[in-house]
Image 1: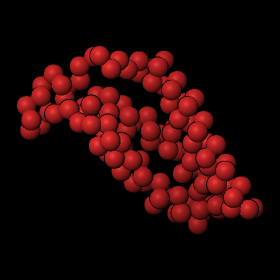
Image 2: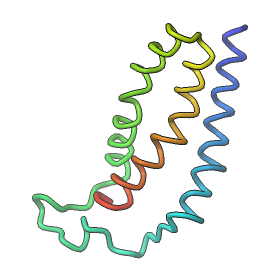
Image 3: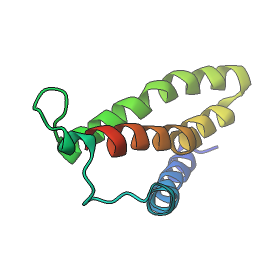
Image 4: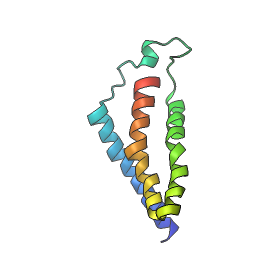
Length: 111
């Protein structure tokens, strides 16, 4: 299979994941409200609790989500082939990693 086709499919999966799945989870299930105070704002003490910019939060989420996929993806690919490894990296990012990181790090604790 041509690498460009795999790249295009990956971009499509990520686009749909962000604009459909992530938006649905945020609006219908989590129901995040930017006006609602998080612990970082309620208990702001400058040491343990402090509001952080969205760019720093993006870095935290990227670091968390990028941890397992580059390690487990190739291991899965070696054992079962490249397609399961690719699916693990593309779909696992949203269906298991993103929701956990978004709810625990972004919504509940640091924003």
